[in-house]
Image 1: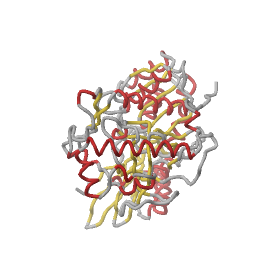
Image 2 (image 1 turned 30 degrees about the vertical axis):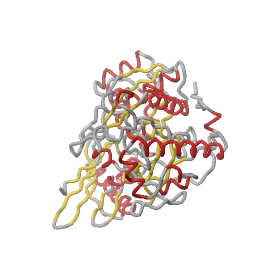
Image 3 (image 1 turned 90 degrees about the vertical axis):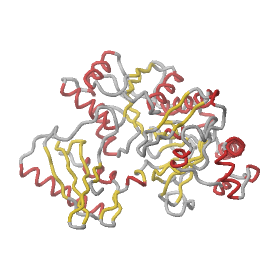
Image 4 (image 1 turned 30 degrees about the horizontal axis):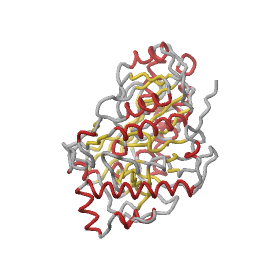
Length: 436
């Protein structure tokens, strides 16, 4: 039976722009006041900028407010940005602390209710409904992903299976036995699950009931989506968010799959120049800056996500929603590779690699320094056994296309099926930078 996407809250999802912006302004003013009165860091910075909550009279006035960066959350670890007593906090999550100190986010009861509502909207946009069984292989510890989808599915009245990562062969069995109709995971793990199923003699497209996928938490391209959809015979949805913004549920693409709708009654988004911080016009690519409008425990002002995108120059969508859309995330500004002075985005490499029918969805990007020059090697796994001549021809073809797209001449190495490492539920390690 075809999946029918729908609007969970059509009165707001398709509201006139004037109504959406009125809600945004009311909530922006309350958020700024809440942060100013209850978070010492924001009070100090607003005073330094010569602005007070009473000065916020239009949405454009958000540009007068200071940015918040991830380092601010690290410096204020663990609860320096709390705007409520700790006794009102019901849940705490944290991102991985690659610098030795994680970023902590906290939730009051109202925050958890908001998050559940946003995730319910997000899942409904793909057609998940009461009677569906959502199989979740996302982590359920510090990471926000697992619980975000969990709360959203419960709010909808769908059945949620909190399976977690790993145990891939058991997942294949349980997906069949429990009659799962939808899957959520990081994108690369959807590929791994399908690959394992086929090894077990189970065709995900024919032998399971999974027809919906909700993926995020790592970069993935349209080519990756196409491969996942074909393997599972599903329609998949790109879910955007991060722990600082509650978690998943800030934006999602609808069934038209032309940009991601931002839930604007809860988030005010800007795209700014990554060098100057100046606002950019629609269709101009830059860094996404988000001001959550309903955060209770930890209000954030102009959070610099470091994700690269642009706002689509369109007031509405064929799905009927009137909330702004952002383009699929191109990557993070700090994930961009600079190779001999040229900016290279891993997603561009993925799109080209996966557009070749003879490649599997496994690859590595290796950057090394040789004789004072950067050297780029792209290791690609073949989708089937190839002769040495076929490997050379595939490598030549990919090298030519990559050189034209990224203005860097890479070395391309084709390896046999199964040679590159598989992830068992976590984010894929695609880029290996050995330059130190």
